[in-house]
Length: 236
Image 1 (tube, rainbow, N blue to C red):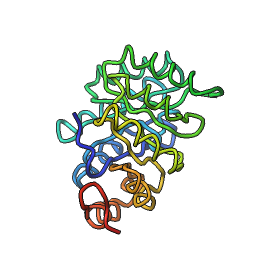
Image 2: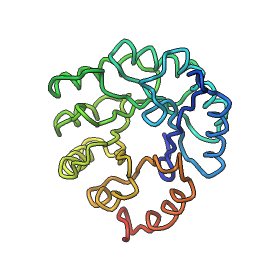
Image 3: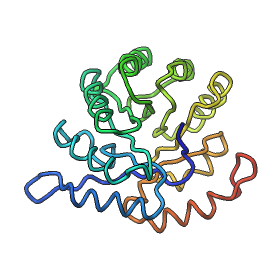
Image 4: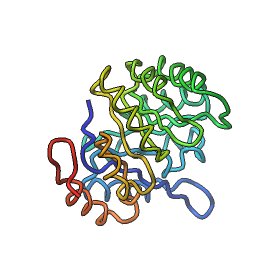
């Protein structure tokens, strides 16, 4: 459905001096990223401070991202904060013409993996858009829970932000047996530095926070060492 090879761009959400979202600057930021070769744009996500945006602010960011991309790249939108707020943000993103969702953990999360799976399931069952779940902080899935996520048709992948390579190795190996098209993305803040380790356990894609601030460095990495593959492995 989506091509995750290449730069996955997480634009920053800029604000004016009086605390308003600066839509014009945001639009320019997205355009520059597209001109530099961004493959998919993740608007109002972590780097874009989804947690700090109310629905009206998020709506302006999402609308601008979709307008700027205009078919040049798909747009994913950040959602989370509980079942109700997540559903609201997803419906808002779908109405604006976005293509997918990056789902964050509920606020103040305490509990086990069963509750996490129930949370993702409750959000996914009403979603009009495909979802990538974000494994970070307290949102940690064991292997059986990851298999359950992969069994949800609306959930297409997992963005991994814990840095637990052994857990990821087992998640990837097990899920590939039941759903080979399920996507795993290295989502650490310095993903470029850790891709050799992630590729060694079967993670083919990564998000680039660096691209939002130093795009030439991110592009050079993507077109250089990262692009040298034999089969599904990287040559260091």
